[in-house]
Image (cartoon, rainbow, N blue to C red):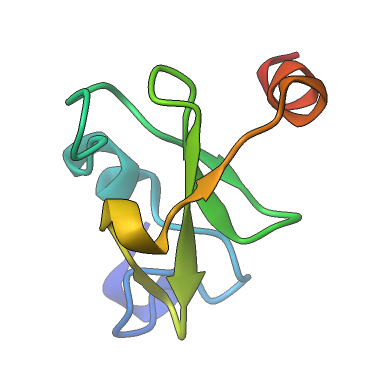
Length: 79
């Protein structure tokens, strides 16, 4: 991916989060890998059962800002 394919928020110009950003970011609680939920525009920690919002292209990586996943939604995200 070239620099022209990214905006300054680390998102691809097609609207997806840059995979390189996902390689760097981890859950602040569990230090485990996050997955990107494009439909909800969130970074999801299955280990902590939390979803961190992305606002204006910036992941908000605080537990206070995170949404707790319910069992139904977390099963859907992991499949």
